[in-house]
Length: 124
Image (tube, rainbow, N blue to C red; front, top):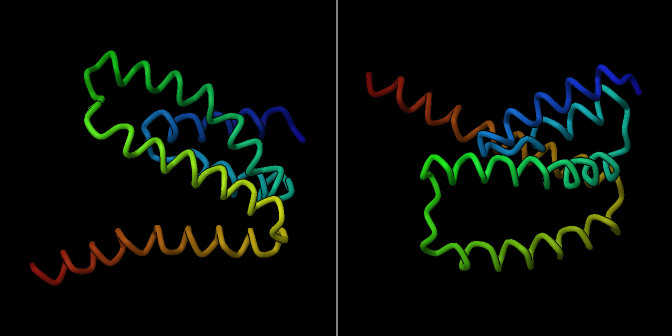
């Protein structure tokens, strides 16, 4: 794998991750499609790269007073439990199913703003 392509993937994923928009949404397709990395490996790389990105982004957001601490544990506890369950499931699922599931997720994710934009155009 080319250092420059990996570096570019890191930049793009880091920018989105730093804004809190989920850098993995872009990083995983880049690693699988552009670099030919297996889906499971790309997901692992994404999870590992997320750790330092989230620590740095959290510090910046905290410094700017953008963190709301109310209800934080109600968010963290289920997220930890279900991310562990998801990781266990991902280990046992075939790569083809992971690719299709992630693709469906991306299509649904893009459909939300698309349909909102269509509704907004109809109101004018």
